[in-house]
Length: 584
Image (cartoon, one colour):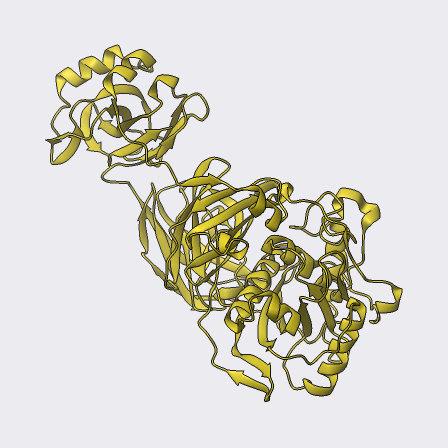
């Protein structure tokens, strides 16, 4: 290998520490900042959404329904990426039914609009999203229990641009005097011993009825109603799968474009009507439980009611929720609450902040409608273990892994094929356990190869509630040429700039920066021409390294280009890709 140019080594010897902020500011050039298009929500928009504050963002959303997508959105002042994959909650035999003046009849099943995923860089986050008419609706379950929502602004402001979305935090919602209407009169089911609280995943089939009031509330549009139902149930399913090991599959959605339920202002009466009508007319609808989405009455007071401990019952397995809020996050919390009664969970107000979803006043116990409290979890899981109608997920089996070999740094996407993959709860890669992955179907799953603890082959297994699968091997090799990732956006004086990189095991790495991206070819690799060396260090045993440093305020409004150079045995070995950082 050729030695590294002597003049660069001389400069390096003088500047092994950080270059002074003043010198850096002189070497970078001002460049336009691609500011995201953000707006403050006005008072009318906030009132319509029941919020005290929110941000409006013009999002780039696919007009079609791709299998995977990445959507950039600003959350808490940071540009984030939602990594999403198609996830159909409906069963293979799903039916969309419409009740009109001629009766109830089946209509063509539309394409699936629901997605799952996470916020890139926040592996503990979960996103339940839907695409409808080129607009995004998303519920974001963030680390620490925070709940964020994204919805089209046109839902409350029809004159708004189609791509404008409102982004809000649940904590900024206006607390309303609303409550669940469950009383002892409605506790219809008998409670049986549940056995140990084991988090074994079970599949529950649910049928949905959207009454005429709900139909009219959502623009008298069948497609919009079924989209709203799926958006809410997608968020509900995400909560149940995470907290109590229950996943929902929708067998049927019935949209009532004409009335079948008598006039009433009482939600308990509407539940009784729902029960009587289904027992007389819909015994053949496949289900473990049925739920009525209603738009009945004013949006205050009692907003939901359900029978207790009734999963698997064809005669009393019912509940109803009122679409009282413009926020899909709040409506999802309400449906999760009422279904919780069906699963034998009671109100738990005496538990205080640990009550969460099952608080009788929605959001009134610590204002957390994203999680079940410990008492509720134990009640639901114990009851779940007594239900014979629920199906078990297939035991996972692995057939292939592709690619079978990845680099130690930024190994990329690995695809597994096999059976029973839709029920997978975790992936074991060597000694590391992953809980973030994309299950495209029962036969295909992808994950991002984690950083290894050793080079060479490691075993890969997937697990669900029935245990681990067979093992396949994934081979980790040295990263050649070097690779690097750097923050695309920088915030001087607020957040340090961070680098991760990889190359030769135990090699010497050198971080260089430049005010432009002009390069010169050296040993066949492009190297920044007008660079300043910043710092240096040694890569670990598998060739990985990290570095972060505060950003001086003098860099605000400027951009820099960064690169990692690697030496091995005193000679130049590799140069990484070049990364650009723009400072706000």
